[in-house]
Length: 138
Image (cartoon, rainbow, N blue to C red; front, side, top):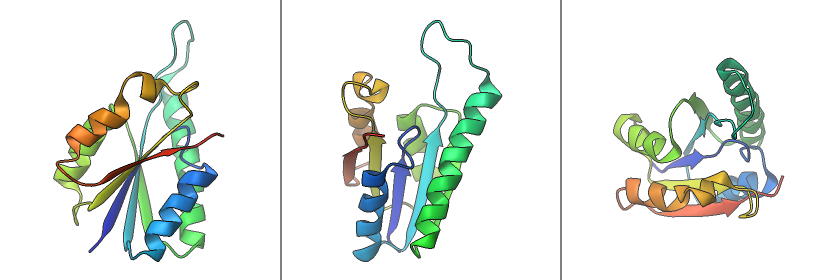
């Protein structure tokens, strides 16, 4: 079974990400798992953990709804870990095991993930699976 793992948070509902997943489904991907790591606050901001988790959950729910409306078999999780660690965990735990990965980020000017080399770290964690980087400008 072909299984696409999507890693995104603030960009999870972005048009270019949804289109990339739809293309994969048209090419034969049978299952999509979306992982939304909780965003950690920038310096100086007081943001409560449950608020961040709830926001990630709302974004994830909207994305899953869009994918399901398009006829794509999809489910997802909000996780409290770094994106690369979330990929390692997903590869170890998901059944069937993902066969490819999409990482979605903001454009470089806005992306904390790009500043922290998350895409490269996900590639390292991917154990040789193909990884596509999708930029979403929301």
